[in-house]
Image 1 (cartoon, rainbow over the protein chains, first blue to last red):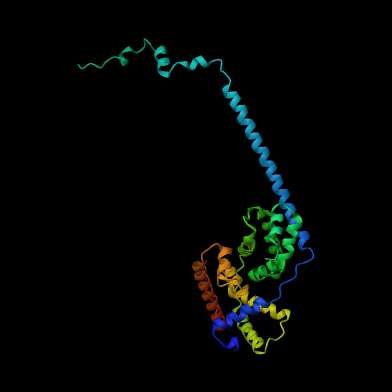
Image 2 (tube, rainbow over the protein chains, first blue to last red):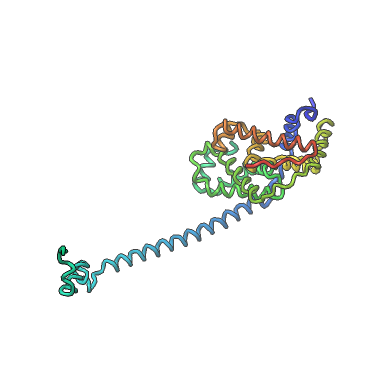
Length: 107
Length: 196
């Protein structure tokens, strides 16, 4: 049966078949060298990126350690913080405003 | 399988010679699939190389050598899809030409398989390319794998990791759109472009 005389379905199948029979271009002689060239270029990019990332992580780690050491060092004026804010305030204003803290009395 | 599992395992371990062996065994097939998927002979080799490039860098993710082929098809589908997306071409349907091509195909088929010279093949490629423009890039590749490459639904299921029924629905809809475009081309009418 001639497919072109059938339905659109058959005609489409015939077209697809003809398409499937179209020759495929042969790989060029440069196919493999070009492929390996692309692989190597991507590898070197990945390698540089990884090296940069490693350097960044190392630097961040070193900075964290340095900050940790710095923060753990004892401070000379640490006693200044041994009082609470209220205590420090009371000490500073002990006689200035005694009414404020006294009981409220009705008139 | 065109190569032994052993070769794949060696390539996974970083053996360049084994990887070369895989490329040499599969490049013709991959070139064919890419050629039919993108219908652009000048870019076929570039896309095929991209497939093998992705293969090289993702071989270590392959769990078992048994699933190598569907996995390679998947890489091919993805590379072709990326190419089509990048191109954003969706060339205008040359429907007046297409009608002419249908007549040409009719003549060729009726005439008992006339010689298919390069001009004829080009016309066929252009016709199919224009018709497949009626569906999304993803459906175009799926349809091509089924209709032209002849992959079974079971094989497509492994490639797409989608269940068979979903694939059947997608294929049916895609084919209906292409058929509609074909019918309209026959009448010399440009089809409406369908969504994704």
